[in-house]
Length: 329
Ligand SMILES: CC(C)(COP(=O)([O-])OP(=O)([O-])OC[C@H]1O[C@@H](n2cnc3c(N)ncnc32)[C@H](O)[C@@H]1OP(=O)([O-])[O-])[C@@H](O)C(=O)NCCC(=O)NCCSC(=O)C[C@@](C)(O)CC(=O)[O-]
Image 1 (cartoon, rainbow, N blue to C red):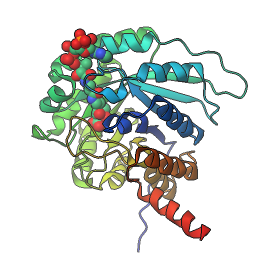
Image 2 (cartoon, protein in one colour; image 1 turned 90 degrees about the vertical axis):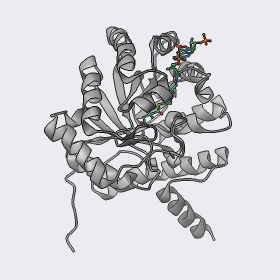
Image 3 (cartoon, helix red, strand yellow; image 1 turned 180 degrees about the horizontal axis):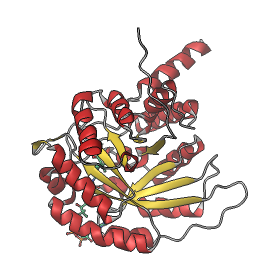
Image 4 (cartoon, helix red, strand yellow; image 1 turned 120 degrees about the horizontal axis):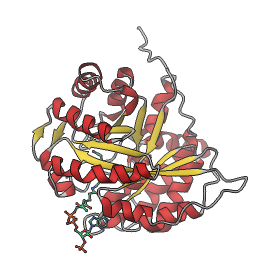
């Protein structure tokens, strides 16, 4: 049987979103200490890009209300991680950006601490229905709100990432036309986002639909693959194979969530992102280096699932923990 091989060109970037996309959907409030421990353990496992919270309305997403404290803590306590870390925060408007900017600046690092940086992310939708539900405005209005946020951030030298949600299908509007996704991605890149993450928010995409979309974006609309990221939820169990399709199309940035934590408060039934453990196992097994310590991620996934009292949604995490348990018998 012929073995399918993906050429490992360049390095792969993993954006760990468990502390934001993962925890925003938890029913009970997760303590600030737990969130900080999660973030610090993730950086200790080699993850260099960690989404740490959202400067959004606490009335809309109460779970993220302590983001200012988390941002302050991370600025005051640089990680003793093996690599420099970039923390990112969602900021939907100027209120969010002002709050982000009012956090005390990072303190200088000591010799055993890594220099870290932070950045912001704006989040748009390719469907009007989700835009209304998620950020209470139309797509056009959202782009109008993001423009001054990006301008101000860039004036201050803060990189801005973009998201586009509901790239395949929206629970409110039905299938999303690929041209609509391309229009919003283009608008965000033109505005100044250095990268745009493609959100299959409810995880309905398949290799067929994701493949059609990413090829349309890259080949037909000439959007640069190096400025696109894959943000695939695993609701229908398609996330890993969709990551393979994205990798083959030239995308090199993948968002993932330890233990597959998460969902979206405004997309009923959506489960978490592809689990970081599953993504790392898949990439390394495909010959793509991640520089992430799989064993440590598996332990973190097991730990946070226990703390939250939820099922570990990583297949790799569950398998490796079971193997470890069996070895102890
Ligand atoms: C965008 C808004 C604020 C608009 O909400 P709004 O009600 O239209 O906003 P407003 O400007 O009219 O303000 C209403 C109140 O909110 C306050 N407010 C206003 N802005 C902020 C802010 N930044 N931080 C804190 N407070 C804020 C503001 O001060 C005011 O307070 P009040 O006078 O009533 O006391 C709201 O809809 C919101 O916060 N939505 C949260 C959306 C969210 O976090 N969704 C989950 C993340 S997106 C996602 O998961 C998808 C993604 C990214 O993962 C990709 C994928 O999977 O596809």
